[in-house]
View 1 (cartoon, rainbow, N blue to C red):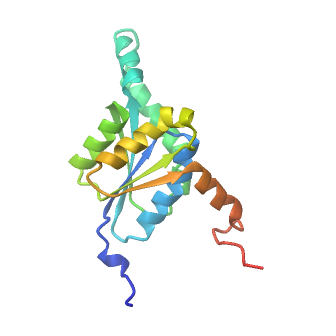
View 2 (cartoon, rainbow, N blue to C red; view 1 turned 90 degrees about the horizontal axis):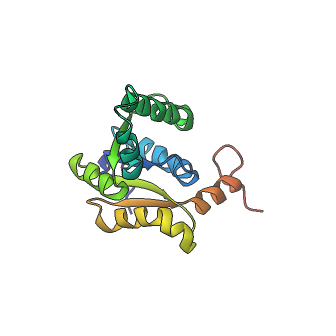
View 3 (tube, helix red, strand yellow; view 1 turned 30 degrees about the vertical axis):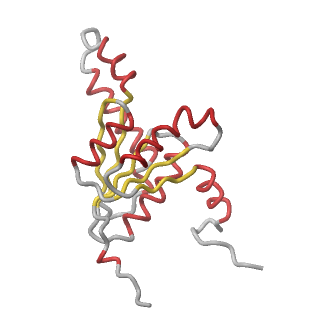
Amino acid sequence: MSAISHRETRFKRILFCTDFSESAEAAFDFAIDATIRRPGSTLCVLHVIHEVEAQFWQSYLAEVDDVEVQAKKAIEEKFAQAYLSRVPAGLEVKLEIRTGPDASTILDFAEARNIDLIIIGREGTSSLRKAFFGKVAEKIVRHAPCPVLVIPVGYAMKRETLTNGNGTEPAAS
């Protein structure tokens, strides 16, 4: 069997979707890893301002000066706090902000940008959690124009507790 060369990868445009939740935080490490392993690839971080929130903001546009600018600045600050310190030097990362329904906005973005791989976090498997976040991940998996890597928050947290703090698995006893 021959070794697979990372230079021959199809995944050049990697999309990481975030709502800044615990599950997205956990999935970000997988997005970084996927991008690092593919020289020349770009990681695009997408945050979708949910349509309901957008409608709320739009109703106050006349009352608040530069509300869209302020909202974008707040998201950029959150991005910097949550993710930028974890990005290795030299890795190309682009932040994108869109407004609309979560799943369809992500799917439209992926299609328009010819995304090669989507990475998204997922909460646990309880029916209550699925009703709130799982439906977005499920819609993306069902309709994405490319492969989707879904990281359950429990898996990511389990791996975190198994590592020695340096990213390696503990030695077997």
